[in-house]
Amino acid sequence: MPSSLAHQAHTNVQLLPMHQTTMDKKRWSPILSCPSSSSSTAMTHPDNHTSSSQPHVSSTVNANSTTLPSFPSLRSRNLHTLYGTDHVTGEYSTEGNDKSPKGSVDEKARPLVDLINRHPEYVTLSSCSGRVALFDPSGGGGSEEEEASNGDEHDGLATRGDSLVDTDDTPQRAKSTKISGKGRGKWIFVTHDILPDLGHQMIQSLRTVGEERRRREQHHKQQTSQHNNNPPITFKHEPPLLHIAASSLAAGKKLLHIVKSVCALRESGLVLTDQRVTVEVRTTGTLLCLPLMITFKDEPRQGFELQPNDMYLMSLADMANERMVQNEIVLQRIYAALEAELFQYCEESSDCLASTTD
Image 1 (cartoon, rainbow, N blue to C red):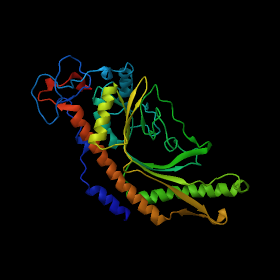
Image 2 (image 1 turned 90 degrees about the vertical axis):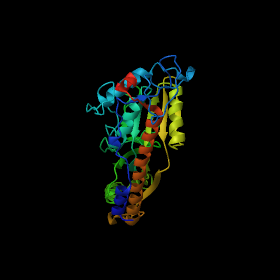
Image 3 (image 1 turned 180 degrees about the vertical axis):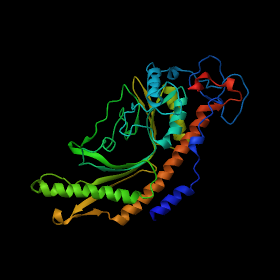
Image 4 (image 1 turned 30 degrees about the vertical axis):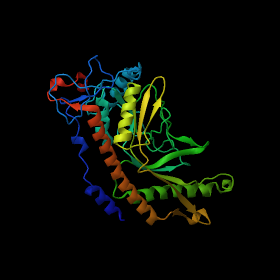
């Protein structure tokens, strides 16, 4: 399918305007896993309007609901990193404290990140709205945004290097990384957007790498029998990914249940340490990963070929664009589920918890 049709496919899908779905903070209140009072009240769905003067919260209180001592400072620190203050403003800080190479939260993920951070029992650690990327395991010395590890880790979790906001516990990411103990690697192409000319941009990036390798091959021809200087380029289309710190094990289990049962993101899971409960929200439903070859002719000076060919790469780009549309739908589904399950509608603004001023 021509790339223009992939672009039309995006425009034909009826996506909700997420930037317009941001909650009215005066009319919505978070449903807490650990109530602040001993009174037992029922959990209410946001669609069930109520004029009660008391907020509805979960009545379950047990050892798993105990707030981790490290969570309040972690939440405050991360909110300051994102918004420049300890509450959600919707305006992102420009001070450059985000430790990711990209340096900011993806635009498409921001409504969801804001929603999560408005709940006092959660704070986002990292996020990615989904992306298309090309990784060169033999590369190095590229720009900070391009260079990253092939399988980055943050608290043992793949983060892709998008938004990383835990300013104390997260180690600084290296600009490039060792790959299986040999050489260095970098991203030669990354986009978080649906691009009508995605195929052409991918081919241009691959040809640039091919030309660099051809020159290197000519210069170091005597070493070719000892070193593999022409490894495959990895093409990746990756679905949305979020890491969220929870205030307690109960809060973490509650969030995990929502994303697995309501959103059907069954690859999601919990990572537990003495200091943190982390919910990894993920899916492999739209994942694509395959090798792309740069093949030299008999002599490097004679040039190279891309395998698969340009026609295949254009079709691959169309498929990636279609899956980027699916990524947006996944983000919409997560937003709707969390809004419905973690927040409640307040008939009067005075009925809402004070914490909704976050």
